[in-house]
Image (cartoon, rainbow, N blue to C red; front, side, top):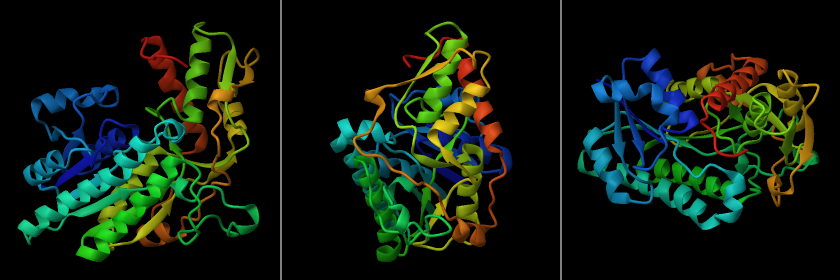
Length: 343
């Protein structure tokens, strides 16, 4: 039986990837999570986990190499999707050391654990996906942006400790491919969202606040940060399909790909779209919250995905409007159930 290992299975992307693999393959899915990881995003899978029905959870931590070695040796996954990270750019400004340690050294620990097991068993040759981020490109001056969008060869100019950590993640993936012949591919996924998106991200906190306003829990004010950043959106369900195609469509060791959606707009346009779906749209006001502003922000996030599309045939399929409606409905359901903390 084919086995896939997902680090960060309890996150938005990891949980959707598990759903995709369970629905579209016959693979067994092994999820790596920390003992304290919230299980909200995989709540619908827990019955299958308890019944050992193709879904299995193993406890490990990117900051504990022995736990990673133990899991890799036990599972011997055919495919590894490394999605776990400290993934919040704004948080990285106040916790830079934790971000760098988790994302750079954590990735190194995981790849080294796989490498060690491969040295012990020469027949073991897993296919590995290392998830970097479009944030590695950071602030690209308008006069330096390629005509067709940001391609793989654009220089890195990270604009946060998180982005710097993802530069390290990106380079580590390529290093292990080149140094040890491991089948590692790296992706720089641009903004991807949808149900289960963490509320530290702009479009998700907008949706959460709107849902709270509709329930009368807060005043009809949406608190925002920088609304002038240009973003290109993909649906998380299209993103995980891309990740599956990455590892199954003639994987090339050491390759790296930009992946993203096809709908580009300013953050303020995203906010206006979400407000337009609200039953309170005529009453909502927008208020700038200085605490939501980053010291420096990525901008002009428009990807050129032609390399990945040419290699795999992947195309985004879910319209931007559906993504945003599903995100808002997700928060409406959580707010009605009381499953939220602050705004």
